[in-house]
Length: 310
Image 1 (tube, rainbow, N blue to C red):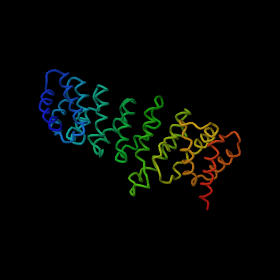
Image 2: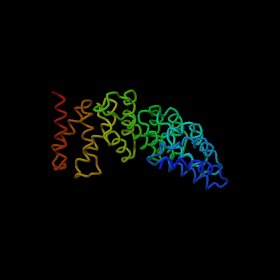
Image 3: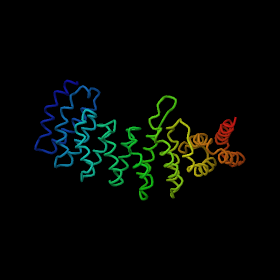
Image 4: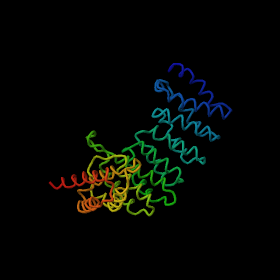
C-alpha cells in the first residue's frame, strides 16, 4: 500500500497547482490523510512540503487551512515549512490561524521554533485562540518551559472567559508533571515551584467559586506529581481545607475528586501540619460527615500526618 500511495504523489502535487481552489484544498486533504496511514512514514511526503509551503499563501483560506493540516500530519519532515506556519499565525482568517497553531507542535516537537511563536499567540491573540494554544503547548510537555511566564500571566488575565485561564493552568501542570518513580531526571525542577505557586495563588484570589475550585483541582487531578510539595503551595491551603469540609459532607460522587484532595493534603501536610490536623480532627468529630468512605479517608489522612511525626 505504501508504494501505491507514493505513486499517487505526483498527481496530488499537480492538483495543488490546479486553477480550481477546491481541487487544491482536496489535494492537501488527501496528503493529510495519506500521512495518517500506518505506512505513512514510508511514503516520501517530504516531497510535498515545498508545494504545501506555497499553498499556505493561497488566496483561498480553505486551501491554507488544508495545507496546515497536511503539514501537521506530515510532522517533523515538514520542518522546512515552519517559517510559513509561524506567519500563518497572523492570518486574518481565524480558521487558518487555528490550524497553524495545531500544526506547530507536531512539526516542531522539540519546540525550538514553536514555543516562542505560540507565546506570542498567548500574548496578542483573541482568547478563543489562546485556549487552543495552551492545549498545543501541553503537547510539548517540559519542552514548553519557555512559555511558563506567559501561561502564568494568562491564569488571571481572562476575567470574562475562564476557559483560557483554565487551559493555562492545565498546561502549566503538564509542564510541571513528574513521576519520580519512573523518571530519574526531573526536567521541570527549575520551573515547578514557580508553577505551583502561581496556580495556588490563583486558587486563593479568584472570586468565582467554581473557578477557585477548578484552579485547586488542577493541582491534583489528574495525579501528575509524585514529588514533594514545598511552601509554594500554601496559598491554596485555606480553600483546600474549605473544600475538604464541603466534600466530606457529601455522599461519594465519581465527579467529586475527594480522594485526590485527601492525597493532596497528605502531600501538603509537612508544610502546614497544624492546620491540616485541626481540620481533619474537626471533621472526624462531626457525625454529619459521610460515614461510608469519608471517615475512612480522613482516618487514613490522619495516620499519614501522624506518621510524619515519628
